[in-house]
Length: 240
Ligand SMILES: Cc1cc2nc3c(=O)[nH]c(=O)nc-3n(C[C@H](O)[C@H](O)[C@H](O)COP(=O)(O)O)c2cc1C
Image (cartoon, rainbow, N blue to C red):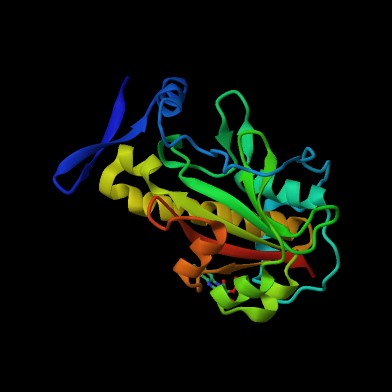
């Protein structure tokens, strides 16, 4: 298999395999397989994405703004499913490739939905199981007070229909790209966050990226150890 090579601190790390099919087989042998279940209490099958002719990508980019105020109107589960699918879901079922690009298809980012006001869905912390397009309940309950304390964004966190939290399982990318993984992982969170902004805009929802939060507090809420997996980036999404 031919590969491009990129020098890293005097050594070399594999940069990009030219054969995706072969590469996916390598991935599946990994002990850090993407989208592992979290000992879920309950799983919710998500609807297929909406049959919706949204905005053109240019219009969505032009209209996108960070929105920090939400109306409190209920959001549907189908809207949430659509948002998750087009931000980070599988768009090529044959190889499992996703809406956002990933260095060597190592897919280090995990996605959590902390729901506040979604029709037919109990408030709680859910993990998005990308491989099966399901939500698995991690903890049921209203976490808006704890969330807003952890993120210093009281109003936005109480009013948002859902907080989408992106975490990284660092080893997935580090075992292949070593020191360079650090930057790749951050890029990938950014790709998914931008998709989230644009899909939200296309659906007529508001979104705001949040980088200012207490890592330890947030990791504790999500049940992450902060070492092997840690929260990186949060988005508030809601009706405007
Ligand atoms: C990495 C990053 C972190 C951000 N963190 C916050 C945040 O913690 N709180 C917040 O209200 N907005 C946050 N924002 C949103 C920016 O304030 C916003 O993008 C900027 O004001 C430009 O406005 P626009 O997004 O409407 O174009 C963040 C944006 C980025 C890219």
